[in-house]
Image 1 (cartoon, rainbow, N blue to C red):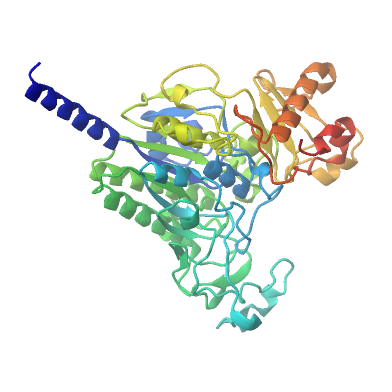
Image 2 (image 1 turned 90 degrees about the vertical axis):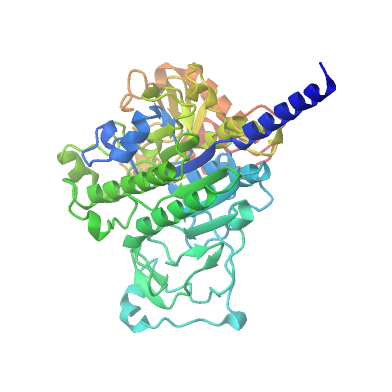
Length: 529
C-alpha cells in the first residue's frame, strides 16, 4: 500500500476511534423517595404514571430489585459509593439536615469516577448524606424574624429551635461538589428536616430568616416552600440537560427527588388529579418530573444514547396512610410484607427501570436479583472504565450490564439488606434469612414488642419462591441453610467487601444485631479480622 494511502487510513481509524470515544452514553439516575413497588400504574397502581410507564415500555423492568436499606440515607450512601451502608459510620437510622457528612472526601464516588473519565457531573435534588456546616463566630445565634409565632412549636419534643448558630453565608464542606459533582442544586435532607433551603454549588441560595414547619420547625429561607421543590428540580434538570447537550462531553445527572416522601404536598396544578387523594396526586407529579426529563432529552437530540435509571430509595411509608390506599384498591408495596423501615420485602423491594434506546431492548423484563448499590459497577462496565476501580472502590457493587444485554445469569452471589434499626437480612436464591424477630422496623411486630415475645425466634427463614409474603418461618426445618447464610454474612462483614479482591476495612463493626439473634450466633457481634 502506498505510504500516503496508509497515512490516510491511519488518520481515518484514529478519527473513528475519537468519534466512538465521544459517544459514551449520557447517564441519568432518578431516585424517587418512599415510592413503593406497586405505586406505578404499570405495576398495578391506580394513579396514572404515564412517563414511568413509558420507561418500562421502552426499556427494561427489573422485578427483583432492592435497596441496601429500607430508609433514605443508607440507600443513598450505597448508590453514591457502591458500598454497603452499614460499612460507613452510620450503623442505623438516617442523617438529618444539620448532620455531618458520612462520606469522606477521600472516597471515590460514582460521580468522581465518571468525572475522572471525562463526564460532566451534576446533582439536582435531595442530598441527605450530611454536610459540613460552619458556625457563626463567638457562639452567636441569629434570631428568626417570626420567632414569636413559633415559640410553642419550637418547644415540642424533637423540635428544638437549633440551626440558628450556623453561618449560612459560607459554603458547606463534604457536599456534592467535594464528592465529584461539577455542579449541584439541592436541599440538605428530607423536606421535613430543616434547614429548609436550596444550595447551589454547595452554597445556600437564600440565608434562612424565618422559622417554617413542614413537620419539624426550623430555619428556612423566606421564599422556600416545599410544594415548589419538584417544579424547581424539573427546571434545573432540564437546564442541565439543555446546557450539556452543546458539549462534547457526556454527562451524568443524579436526580434524587423529594417525593412522595412527607410532607405530601403536591403543587396546586396537581391537587385533585387522582382518585387516591393527596398521595396519588403527588405520585402523578413525581411522574411528571420524569416526563420533563424525557421531553428535554428529545428536544436536545439526546434521547437515543442516554441511559435513564429510575428507582426508589425504599418502600412506601406508612405516612401515606397505606390502609386507606389499600381500601381503594391501590397496593403501594404490592403484595410484599411490610413497608418503609422494615427488613421485610416491602421495606426494600422497589421499582427499577432502565431505558436506553441505543442498547436496551424495549418491553423487556428481568427477574435477576439486583440492587441500587450495583449502579456504580454497571456504569463502570458500560463506560469501559472498570480498570480505574481499585480494591477500595465500590466494594459491594456488581454490574447488571449483562442483564441489560438480555443475558439470564445471576450477577451477584447474594444480597444483604438492612433495616432502620440496623437489623440484617441476607438473600441467596430463593432463601431469605431475616436476622431479627419481627420487622426490624415500623410494622408489627416492631422491635420492642418482638424482643419480648417468647414465641418469636431470633431469626426468620423464608422460601420466597413459595412464600413471597414472608408468612411461614421455616428456620427450624432448614438449619443447614441458616448456618450457610449466617457464615456468608459474617464473612461479608469481616472481609470489608463482597466483590472479588483483597480484604478492606469497615468504619467499625456494625454492632446493631439484637440480643435474641446474638444469643444464637454470637459471631455476628464480633470484630473485624
